[in-house]
Length: 312
Image (cartoon, rainbow, N blue to C red; front, side, top):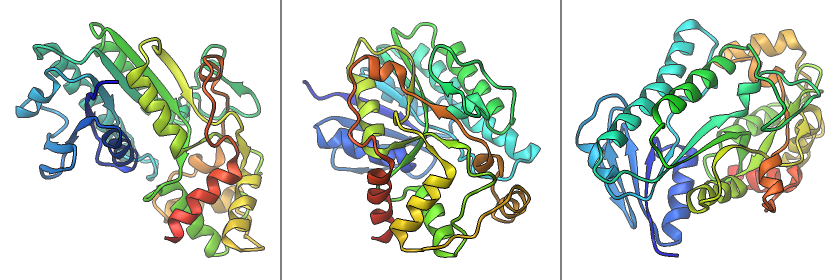
């Protein structure tokens, strides 16, 4: 396969750095759109943008082979009106900016891969979630409303793009800088690694290796179009997930966090308690139907890799 040129809006975060390295390792060239300072490395360059206005960065879309849009402030923040507005703006405004730039490019990329989240489904309880049969939830707003506005902007601005791929992803774990595992390992080491709430809520997760493989596939495979869930076919309950982390970190006991304690603790830590108290039992129906074989389908194996990276 001939080398490609890929544009990564918001590609300076955890996922973006790992995707950049994966693409460069196979011979592609990568342009990262970042609010940080311009810089470059072997096979890639970072170009400054503000995620709002059109300026010199627009030129990078000309003759690129794909856009993989990863912009967005982390949802791990207090559920205030101000934070909700910032979460929405950090996703919607960059999508609209790239859409306008795509329209103005002389030879725009033929494929736009857009990241979203399984949080679009809110609290799914024990129901199985897939791409075709699951209705959308109405809340919590910091999860559902953010995704609704995010995906709405993508749909509104990509009408002329030949191929679009929308990826609703579970929690990515593994690799250096993994924020989810770093937070959980910290809690376990502090003796707070017991079940959260009832512990019965489902966690949909995906190994970093599989996440990167699906993103690359979305770039390359012209038959891949529309909505996909990016998550392991083996979701896990919260109580089992926490027991796995305790075992890997070497802690026999972890203090449980009943709902009221979780709500208080999350606010002290500057987080949203709904992230831990709600769950989704998602299955990647389309990927499985199309023959994708997960590299790391088992949670313990994925968590072992993730914890080892935190230790290092």
